[in-house]
Length: 247
Image 1 (spheres, rainbow, N blue to C red):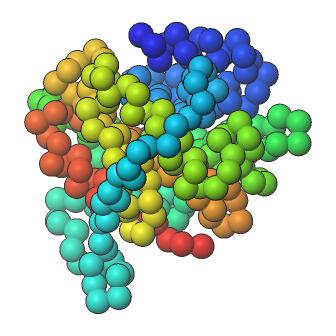
Image 2 (cartoon, rainbow, N blue to C red):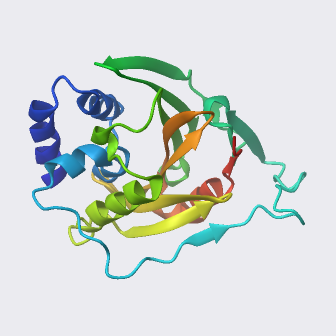
């Protein structure tokens, strides 16, 4: 598989760099190829043989409104069989099925020369006797203490999203990416990717990735969801419930 080959090529090239460490972390979490592409897009960028192109036309940005007269989340709208969970480091909230259980969050500080950053990961699981109803939700955050380093894509946050879009788009023909578009959640523009899990085509993965400046940090935020293909409506409900405080 092209992504696997690219991953091992990048391991040799960036063995001592933060890019390798970040990708190795996601690999240990056993992300499927499509989410590795979304979460480790900076490494794919370095592996690409050709320079990035610019899409001939800018894809439409889908906006998810929070409701309320002033664009604020409306209280009391979470269904009784759903609950709100929080990710404090990103000032993020989202709603999950009430039976979802949270795993222990983790953080890992890294340094490469003058560049310092910290990885954070959060995980929730929804067990079910029916495989199609099993749900896994992950939130991955990388906070750089200074600006985005060149290895992360550099440039403006919009440019990094455009580069990610261009690179990911190349894999649509292989079937690893079934849907690719810009999606704005609570006023924050990100890249939405959907694709099948390699080991089970009846299960799919969704990923939403954005780059932003938050609390004086350069931040990459990834939300990943795995679930049954027949359960897409519920998976999208989780994505669309995301609320992000602007600080």
